[in-house]
Length: 115
Image (cartoon, rainbow, N blue to C red; front, side, top):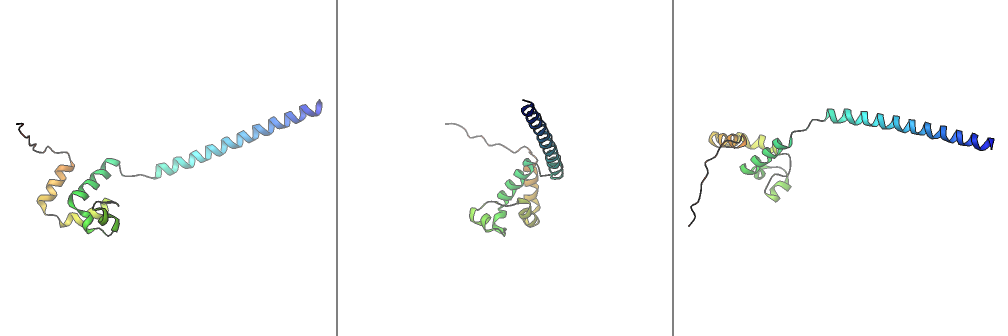
């Protein structure tokens, strides 16, 4: 019986050491993930959606280098790249309309009369 209790004690000590090692590894992995997520700053989704919408309204896909954009006739890549090319080509009036549209300015609403 003495040898059995010695093995049980050794097994529990071994299990405890394994659990401690697992917890340390998990803590280190979480710390690494925290630093990686803090360093990665992405553009908010709303801004990216607005850029893509403006790129599609302007028809930036017509001037895009990506064949996927030209085939689908809409922006499939990073819209900011296409907008950097297209925005200087727009007349000032069109640019003013787009910037007002992007800011959520009120647009005149047409109401059809029911018959």
